Image (cartoon, rainbow over all chains, first blue to last red; front, side, top):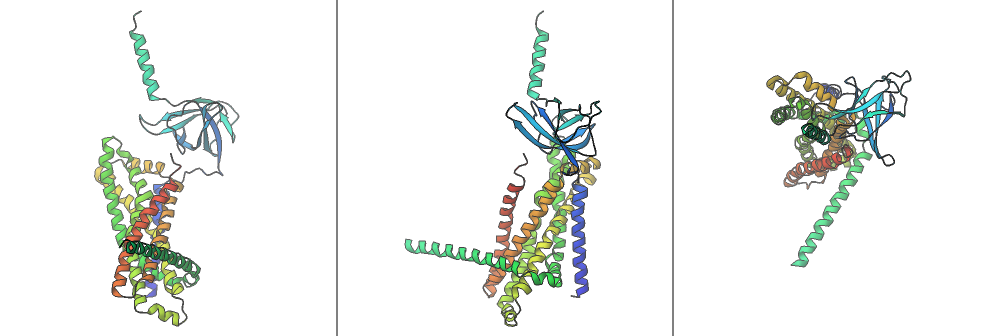
Length: 155
Length: 262
């Protein structure tokens, strides 16, 4: 076979292959893996994190602003210490609050970040003080039944 | 009788170990003699045409059909739980993480691996390799190493094409044919598929598979008895061994890559 045609085919093959890789990277995956360089970490403590996992999104007003970097159990306070890696582009007031929410009824769990009113912003390694635990379905049902029972109690 | 059986077993074991040792030395020899494959890159390009470009049709068509089947089957299952929008995640995740690298590697082993073994085996049977040595041309550097690097370069490209084609197939069936919402299909896929965790690991897998398949194919060809039967037996062994190696390696790699993901 002619050498130029052969080279042409191989070149075409490489270009199409790299295009497929780019397609996978840009269109299928998202490059929103927050890098270490342009992110900062804050810690939030929860009494119960439910089914929260590492790499779960951190959302504020519904927009993904970071990801959960680490979930750890603190053996001194018996709480869960969750490290959030937030994008440097977004700064939050120091008195912001973090809550563990569920997308949909049975969807994945994520952390909802609600901005506070403080003029001082959160810095790297800061701690979010106001947190709200995950809603555990069993507890919710228990509370509901308890409430119903009280309602029906003779006065 | 028993003594004979035990001796037979011992003989087989020794032969097996010897072959593995020879294969490892062969692999190291390829790496050491790779200089020519890069200095005269034309040799590698020529082999990339035979193992890469000529595998394109089978890879693209199978990718499309695998993706379309995933779209149909995934929709059936997800529909039961009322979450058809997750179809994009299902198709993309299964293709990028597993099916893309593995099925492309299996196809590559049977399409290109067998051809490499037959070619090298025949070269050996017709004493072309010995002739090269007589002319002070190192057959490993001139014949084997370019084929090795061509396979290692082609494999990840083929796997990426397979995945991309499969996702397109899933899109065709899911969105165009069944009518899953297009925005949800892509956006859910994008939020779930991670670059490092999924795509990069898929590429690493396919590179490892490429190394394994081409090494096995080249070794079987180089080691084949120089007869017609020997070459045909070696070709069969290439397909069987490299397919098994791909599946076993896939398990090991997956166990390493996705272990800490709970």
